[in-house]
Length: 283
Length: 292
Image (cartoon, rainbow over all chains, first blue to last red; front, side, top):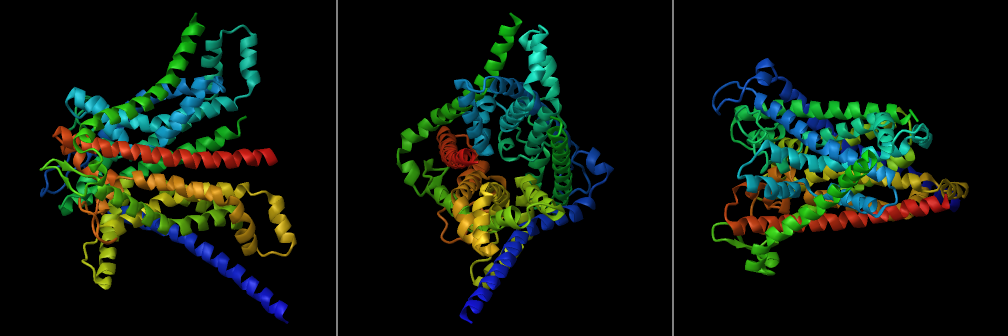
C-alpha cells in the first residue's frame, strides 16, 4: 500500500516539475512579444516616405524624418566592414593554416578576450586613440570601434570555414604546381566565401544596433554628413537621444526608428541563418 | 617571392589582433595613472564622486554594478535553467522546439538601446505601481527596473550554454537511471543536473560577465544617481552607465582619467570572468571527447 502511495507522489512530482519548467521557459519570451508588439504598434503609424527621406526638425515642430540617422548607420557599417573584413580574413587564413603555431594560440585567446570586453570600454579606447588626437568626434572613430566589435566574428567564421574545406581541394591545386598564395586566394577563399559572408553578416547584425561605443566616437549629428571625419548620427544614437528627451513628438520618432532598426537586424540575422544552413550541407 | 609576401601578410593579420588587445589594455592603464596617482587606493573605496570638486571615488558604482548584476542573475537563473532543461530534455527536436529556440535567440538579437527604450515606457510605469503598493517612493527608474531588463537580456546566453552542456550528458547513464525505473524528474534532478553542474555554472558566469558590461539599457533605466543606493528600488549607477553618462563631457584630465580607470577595471573583471567561464567549458568538452 505504502509503495503505491510513494510512487504516486513521485509521478506527481514528475508532472509538477515538467509544468514548472514549461511555465518558467514561457516567461522568458513574454518580454519579446511585448517589445515586438510595442515597436510594431507605435512604429508603423509614424513610418512614411517623409519619415525615411527627411531630416529631423527642431522639437515642437511637426513631422521630420530620420534620413541622417539611416545614412549614418549605413556609413558606420561600411567603414567598420572595410576595416574588419580584410583584417579578419587575413587573420582567419593564418589561424586556419597554422593551427598549432604559438601566434595562433595567442591570437585565439586575444580574440576571445576581445569578444568579452564591454562595448563601452572599446568606445573609451577608440576615443583615446582617434578622437583625442584628431580633436573631434568622427564617423571614422565610430566605425573603428564597431570594427573592433565585429572583428572576432569575422576571424572565427573565416577560420572555421577554411578548416571545413576538404584537404584534397588544396592538395590538388598545389599538385598542379600553383603557388601556395594562389591556391589560397583562388581555390580556398572562393570555396569559403559563403562562410566568410555569413560571418560578416552576423557581425553587421551585431553592430547595427550598438550604441554605447558610439556615444563618444561618432557622437551623433542632426545634419546630413557624408564625410567620415565629421560627427555622424546613427539609428541607435537617435533612439537613445530621442527616447530620453522630454518631447512627445520625439518619442514617436524614436518608436519609428526602433521599428526600422529591429527590422534591419532581424533581416540580417535571418539571411545569415539561411546561409549558414546552406553552407553547412555543402561539404 | 609572392608566397613570402602573402605569408607575411596573413601573419601580420593575426599579429594585429594580438597587438590590438595589448594596445587597448596599455592605453587604458596609462590613461588611468593620473587619477591613480591623485587618489591612490581611495579611488576604489571613496564614496564621493564629484566632477566639480574633482574628487573621485568609485565605490558607489562598484556597489551599483554588483547589485544590478546579481539581482539580474537571481531573476534569470531559474528561467534560463528551465529553458536549458526544456530544450535539452523535453523538447529535443521538432517544429515547436525550433520555433522556441529561435524566439529565445531573437531576445539576444534585439539591440540594448531598444530594451532601454521599451523599459522606459512600459516597465517603468509598471514598477511605479509596485512601488506605490510597497510604500516606497514611486520613482520607477532604479536598480530594480534595470535588473529586470538586464535579466531578460542575459537569459539567451546562459540558456544556450546550459542546453549545450545538458546535451553532452552521456545517454548511457541517463538510460541506466531510466531502466531502474526513475521518472524524468528524477533523471534530471539526480543524473543530468549533477553531471552538467559545472557547465551550467560556466554559462551563468559568462552571462554575469555580460550583465556587468551591459550599458545602454541600464543607463536608461537605473536613474543615474552617483550615491550609494540605499535599497534595490533607489536610483543608482553602474560602472558602465556612469561612463556612458559622463565620458563625452569629461574635460578635466582628472575626470577623464577616473572614468578611464573605471573602464580599465571593467575590462579586467569581464576578462577574468570570461576566461574562467571558457576554461570550464573547454575542460568539459575535452573530457567528453576522451570518454566518447
